[in-house]
Length: 64
Image 1 (tube, rainbow, N blue to C red):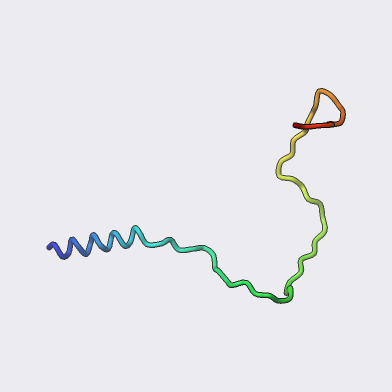
Image 2: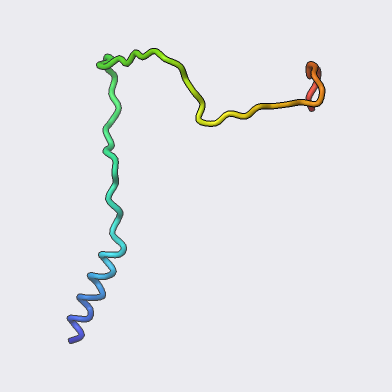
């Protein structure tokens, strides 16, 4: 009975403490030629934009 409990405890400890599976693959870097080129045309649009309004117009001479 004690052996079964020990096996269950050890199995539970191993199951909950095993490292998580990674979603990426690691590959060593190496020198070589570029194999693929991407060329596109179009406009770039920001995901967010803000309009700024200032009380006075002018040029900043010093910020400190």
